[in-house]
Length: 383
Image (tube, rainbow, N blue to C red; front, side, top):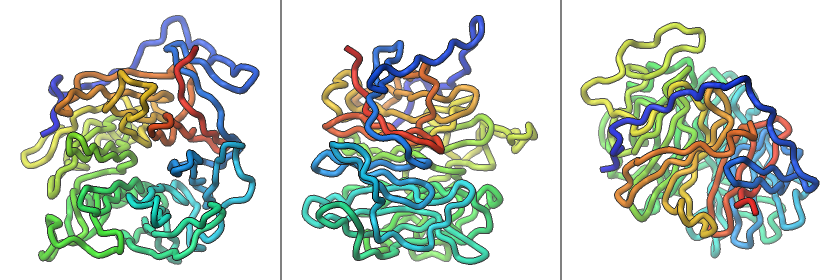
């Protein structure tokens, strides 16, 4: 069982000393060098709210734009034309649009991938997942099939939308509670504020914790607010997620089937207007986070480090931070051999960049910024 050896790490805001220093300017090649010895090498810019990243076997990158486009970044840079074949019901409103992306474990042979997005349905919308086949020149999708749709809602907030495969081939899909439906996170007849588990063809695994009951059979865990970071750690057999909390109370959790993660009955955060959601931070039968961030860092995107260049970070987590009093940075969560949290480290903080997604592959660590005029960078060690 993954538990923090520090019991529970509360990350406090750093105090400003003599006012905030100006962020470093890019060099002649457009790269940024951070005071902590890291360098951001630009791969593409001019992206409209980039959201999710995936690396193809040849080293090219696919990136989703929240406005409803899927783009290719080749060795020569951003390909001008978006990929064709996307569904025509992508709802690019509020926090919605084209969101998560994940390659099939057998992508090398089947060229299959999965996209999550906010699906417009007239007066309602929901988080949906499609499977599709990427054509040989990566210019478009075919065989587009909807395999999952969450519960309908009437808001355009909190879609979750990160995905990961478990060793048995089942697909984990994170969801949000649509903001307005926070109380539904504690009820089991819907998918608001849940993490779901389905098979790649959309069927429901018979060993899901609530399969065969009157509850929604797709539920894997519940009591979530807006889960925007997800990784499966094969070496330690851990499913790890972080969720975007309210004002304060961002959380890192280890996800186990059937467990209740507390929202909104317990939380370390408050409403954005300062009003109290609940006075309770603990309750029987509800899980505690292994890391909490108070004040908020607005986390989105998370990677398990597997890039040889960063040998000291192998098996650690990188969490993108977008906003909040302590955001605009990457956070490294240091894990020991058992998966226990032994500390955290803030990275790239002096650059003051908002990070929407981060991935780590044998070829490199890549980040996407959270801006309207967004960019994708490779993270390298500064010379």
